[in-house]
Image (tube, rainbow, N blue to C red; front, side, top):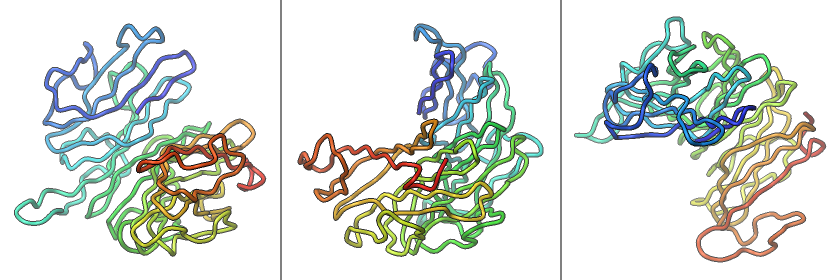
Length: 324
C-alpha cells in the first residue's frame, strides 16, 4: 500500500518476515516481534532516503490491508489484521484486547484474526492511537479514508456474528462473511457508527472514500444475489452463483442511511480495488474483470482483451451517485 502527502513524501505499509528489514533509529518498533509483522515506512520526495521505517506487530501473525491514509499533519493511518494478543494498542482505544476465538480445522486451531487500525505520528516514533476491531471469528481492515475533521472511515470483511456495531443500518451478519463500514472518532476512542453490509453469500469491501460532506463510499466485491441495493445503476447480480460482481455503496453523512448501492458486473468474475473522489464528487474506482459483457460507457477499449481477466476503470458522476 502506498500514499503520498502534499509535500511528496511516500508512505508505505506492507508485510515482512525479515529480521533485517531496514528500520531507522528512534522508530516506534525497530525489531521484528514474530514473523510476519507489518511495516510502515516514509520515503522522502526524492526517493533516495527513508524519513522513518518501523515494524508494527506482536508475537502472532499480522497482515496489512489495501488502503492507507495520511492527514495534513503527516500522521499515517495503517490497517490490517492480527491474531497477536500483544499487538501494540493504546490505552482508551475502542477495543484494547483481541477477542478470544479459534479458527481453522484441527490441529490448526490458531487464534482468529481481528482487524486493526493504527495512527502513527508524523516522525514514526509513537502511536497516536491503535485499536483492535473485531469479533470472535476472522476479520480484516482493508480500506481507510479521512474526513477534514480527522474521523477515520474503515471497511473490510468479517465472518463474526459479534462484530462491534453502532447505530447499524444492517445489525447482523447476513451469512457467509459480510463487508462492514465503520466511522472512528478523531481520538480513536469510539465508533461513531459501524454496520455490516452484505447478503447471504461472501461480501468484501476493499476500499473506502469520504466526501467533504461526510458521505462515505465503500467499494468491493459480492457473491450475494441479495446484496442490499438502493437506487442502483445495476439492480441484480449478473454472474453465476460462483462468480462475483463489484458493488459500490454510498452512505449518507450520518451513517444511518444508504443514498445508493449498486452492483456492477458481467457474467464472469468482477472485483474492485481502491476508490477515490475528485473535488466535484465524481467517484473513480478500478479492478479486474473476466466478463466479456462487463458494462461499458464511452470505453477506451470496447472489447475484452482475452486471457483470464482485464483491468477496468469506472467513473460514477455525482448526479448518478447521489451528490458530493
